[in-house]
Amino acid sequence: MFRRMFPLGVAVFAMACEPAEPAPDPFEELVSKYVTVPLTTDMSVLTDNERKMLPLLIEAAQYIDELFWDQAYGARDSLLESIENPAARRFVEINYGPWDRINDNEPFIEGVGPKPSRRKFLPVGCHEGPDHGVDDRPVLPRTSGR
Image (cartoon, rainbow, N blue to C red; front, side, top):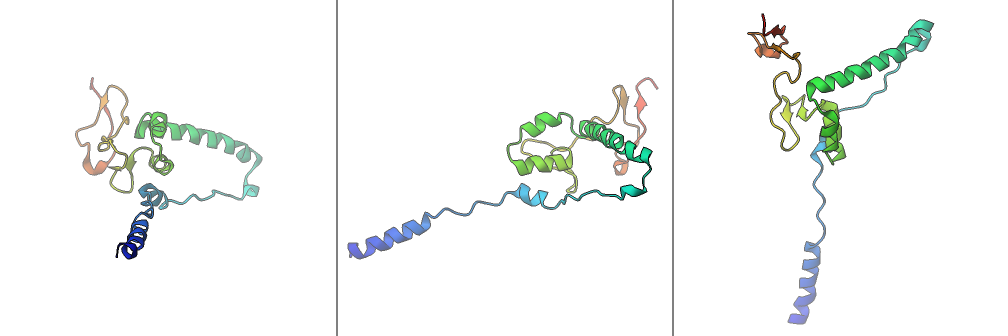
């Protein structure tokens, strides 16, 4: 009896030990919702001066991108360096921080709390006006001296 049951037991054990498929990376799915598209234009319609201006506009856009990162989160490089998962890092880059912009700014990185209101938006010495928070509209900052 043992001789008949032993091979059956080994077969059942071997089937049970097959490696399970790894769980899908949730960040891969989140990143897949976004599509990279090429930006093209017919350069023949531009004047020589307009063509010369394009690299300057691209450079200005890179500075604006850095400023937006600073307003939206702050320490971009240290945040990105702290994330090992490449898909999670890409999702942070897409959202300019650890909060999902199309999901009510819910945090998606472990240990990150809710998104602060208007993070680093106002200049030093200014505070939000009396109607801050209404429909999340921007308000004119008021200085403490006025």
